[in-house]
Length: 288
Ligand SMILES: [Zn+2]
Image (cartoon, rainbow, N blue to C red):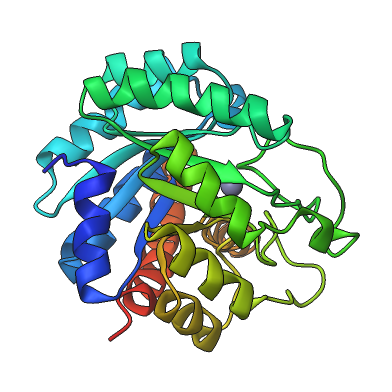
């Protein structure tokens, strides 16, 4: 069933777990993700990243995500990931998305607030949840799919972009967002060096804002790291790159051994592999 992000995260807060948000730029990924969630009886977030418009545009993939969410036997929010402007947000809401992220974190602080406020005013009127970002998540440069920002590589000055806990409090109060994407050491894409997570910072952010924290660049951490961040207030984890990579490697392996391959068989291999990878992620995020 289709629900808002806010509803999902209220439950996650009560239960001290995180809900996985999975970008789905292909039919194989949305099928794999929804099957995984239904088998585990877990809520999920189906996301379309604006930057994936180059692979498949929002107007084609969006209605598919909404339909899968409506038909699912578990609660599902449909979310725009890293929306860059109000027009894109409006387009997603018109399609039936129940959640949007507006990312103006690369702008100055006051401008970020203004842009986010405008989106919150528009979205909340239509019962759509809003996530915004403060601080900046960098990209490893390897499959940093969900961001359009070209900030830097892995650890290069990443700490300069970490979210300041006291500014986070001010930002959440002024914008009235439903969830905050905070930067405390994760990067988008495939990790080239071991991430150095600032757990104390995360804890202070959560204490200060009293709202769910979102972790981007959320694939590729250890099980222990996931549990630690969940216990410190992370309620939504954006997980994508490692599932997409798992699907690709399974297809590669299949092509190497299959002498007479057909394209349709590749989609089955990809879907099954993505599903298994997502099941592992959902199990960890449940924090049981
Ligand atoms: Zn992100």
